[in-house]
Amino acid sequence: MKKVGGGAAPKGIWRPGAVRARVKAPPARLPLGSRTLLMGVVNVTPDSFSDGGDLQGAGAAAGYVRSLAGQGADLVDIGGESTRPGSAPVPVEEELRRVVPVAEALAGAPPCPLSVDTSKAPVARACLERGFAVVNDVTAGRNDREILGVAAEFGAYVVLMHMQGDPATMQRAPAYTDVVEEVAAFLRGRAEAALEAGVARDRILVDPGIGFGKTLDHNLALLRAVPRLRALGYPVVLGASRKSMFKALLGLEEPKARDDATAALSCLLAYLGASVLRVHEVPNNLRAARFGDALRGHP
Image 1 (cartoon, rainbow, N blue to C red):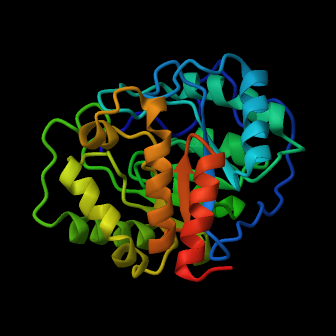
Image 2: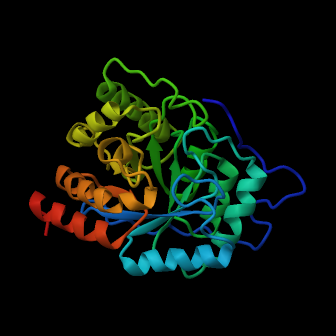
């Protein structure tokens, strides 16, 4: 994995704790297992595949977080670096500049548990100091080896995702002998690394990384394999919302036109036992997930 950041924040920029002192408090507890949870998506980036540039300024982003929570999101994932296919890494100082003002705007009165979508320890620390509960790392702790220790220090949840290659190259020619077994083995290994770093077992979640170094057939095989991934013993997170597979299967060119198809898939994934669904649109996915929960026998 190509290292794109991490370590101490460069001199001359914001550093964790520089804005105001924080008291480490136990992060919010997620009701994992009670129902399929919805993780709303907020990208404070100019170039994310679905909504890059939509949110200008910390106030707008914080307001959108509150809107998603009001619509029923169980938690909201905030990211300052696009990981779409072909994207370039963002320096740590730029990611901090994008994310910290939003964290500051929400500190003290978050409308729901908050997650930071980052692979850099300084960004994770900055958000955890401001009350975030989850670190969602698309590199599963491989980009910045300090990030798992930071999550453990704060008692945070950590989402460990599989990705073949890196965002700049991952979709050029992804190949596997057995995608389900290889992804499962990777996630098992990264969960062990998180445990060794001090992350509590009940704070580890795994994500097969739909669209991250996978063809359409790979994605479909992993979606069918949710029960196999659950057998690893960790809650499973799925992020299929608005992905390009809906274009390949259904001819839906515009990402925001894929929400109905995403909701249909959310119903199936809830039925198969996914613990968390990462979605851009909440109301339809919420109804779909509740129906899938009912089919599975959850209240």
